[in-house]
Image 1 (tube, rainbow, N blue to C red):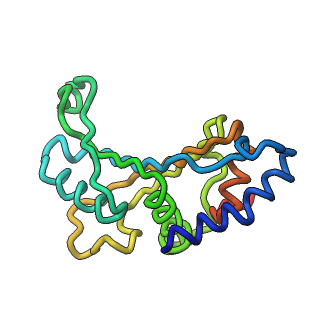
Image 2: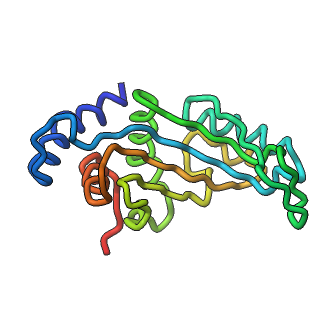
Length: 182
């Protein structure tokens, strides 16, 4: 029932606050979360494809959903990369699993980062979507650090229905995203 906490926060606090802040009268125009995409790309997978299998298992345990393998689009000889080689994995979370993952990210995972002062407010794309880059996957509680062979980072993109960055940032702040103070 963890997802219910974040969903209730949105329905009871965020909707009314966003309506007041941006002067929205139509209930369907209020910004909301659409999906969360977790993307992992490993340069080490070019030499050893078994590392990618481990990463797929770890991302599945972190997100609660089985990831899809991503493959290289182009061949790059300097990196010994051929088109079609598996180089990463990606998960798209929606509805309940999206709320569960975001709640875990904001309340458990990010505070575990050493010297954490907040996430960068500069990760917006101009359309209200926010991308956060993590340099280490070991900060998630599901990862057993004794078994980690290779540390890899991940990109987490929060896709919203906001029309601009101000609406998207307000939505995420109301849900509890810890933005860094400027």
